[in-house]
Length: 569
Ligand code: FES
Image (cartoon, rainbow, N blue to C red; front, top):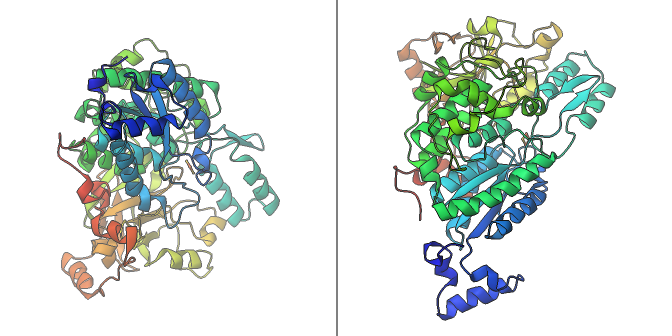
């Protein structure tokens, strides 16, 4: 039992004024008795459950397991909802609402009598939104993600969400499979509760939560329906009560060393490019300096060792059976800050000391990696003065150095309307360019960056060409896609000046993306552009467009970031 004086909730419940009595009385209306007010920490369970977020639809059951743990350890669990962000349904894109959810999480925590919080999330943006909100609130917090779905299987082949779905859609467009087979895929690609089954954004961000130290070790990859996920939830419920007693807050865990560990793990697992934007935003909330240059510096020195789609062969369920992230961290240990603290109260090095890597085809050694460098490379050049990213481990090796003529689309709708056009002037050397798809242009930074390959190329057996945009792409996608070009075209970045016929040069080993047009001509073209009409005149959209930062800064709102030590309430 805690000394009530150290509890934040004491200010609500312990006292002899009318409001103290009233708060106790109203909580008793939920059936809680004296034991709720005898110095037990109140543990919030921040639940992003929603039937509109299918990946998180099982989190009410996960919350029940957390509650068992909280009660058993002497806390009082109180579950509360926030908005949820379902990748499959929300328009124009969940990324528009990540910051809104993070504000909901922060304010729900800080406005209420909560001493510690368990964060339940799963689908792509729900994880970074909760980490951002928890970092800002800075009371003890532990994360439990919902886990990946069971692996899909189709015609004897593993079927990974997004990655294989997109490949098969290309096969459909190219006439390699028929409508009947396509319909079968719909029935077997999503087999259970949980998030996407490859190292997409959800799996990557769950891994980032673990690598940052905000989740119990080994938690990220447990399948959603595996009983061990519910055991993890119960253990996390027990642990958060101890964390309150220890006053173990995110500000003690989310250090510069923790972020460097997370970036390194991201590179080793071939993680989603979206992790770059999210980690920058979480670091901004924690007051930790982190930049694109940190990602590239670490990427160059971190071999890609996790053989998981879309940068490898296996699915998340296999990754779990191979040992999951702890085994990756064990292999990476010589490159990590092993003394970084985690929510368990122990260090990263402690956690991996006694584990064995069970599948060397899936988790490779540093000496025999899948790729010598990490999953994401950061590019600069006259097309992206503030940076761009590419998932080099999921790109075509023969395109990593490429020069080609630009085929430019001003808007995504135009691209979609023309991609099946047999007369489209495109060949295997073309560099497809999409503008107006960044944080302000999209609006909201949609996942349009994996531009569809024109049907005439697919029919000719060409499945990848260089594509450049200021958009993001799904972590489940693959291909030679240059993404997050910053500044984006909608704010007058050089991408806005590119015209069909210009020559674009990509050189990933040299970390360059350039358009072969004179600087003066680029500026002349930019000066000629008409003024932009904002998408929103009111509401949250207006706040977003006034406050969102560019991709290289993490796309948080300026007023939500802080200097070290400024967070907390
Ligand atoms: Fe939710 Fe993929 S759609 S994780």
